[in-house]
Image (cartoon, rainbow, N blue to C red; front, side, top):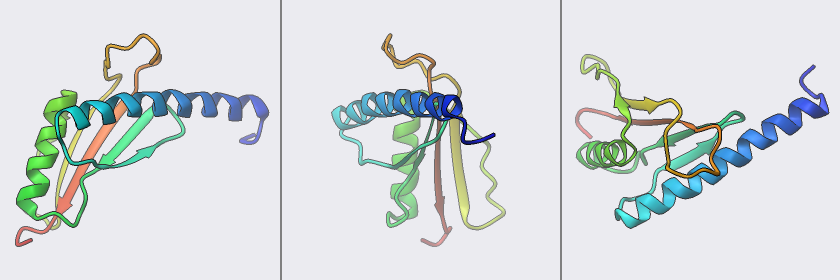
Length: 117
């Protein structure tokens, strides 16, 4: 049953860990002078970042690549034959070098833009 107190407490704990991980990630992005992404904390230890869609395609790609490099994520192959273009990168159990963050978070980043944007 989805509403068991134990299950809710466990999901809440996972979200708290993800929130702590996001705090570290945001601070690293700020120090690297990166524009922020739109972040979503999931109910397990997962974080999903989306590049702001109001940026140009060139700006989105550059910001995506900067965050990927900062977090050492693995880039998925790009399919250039469809629109909108979608860039995706992820890594499971990202090591943030912080003993408070256990288990380590899974991090996903996406960017979506039109070729002529």
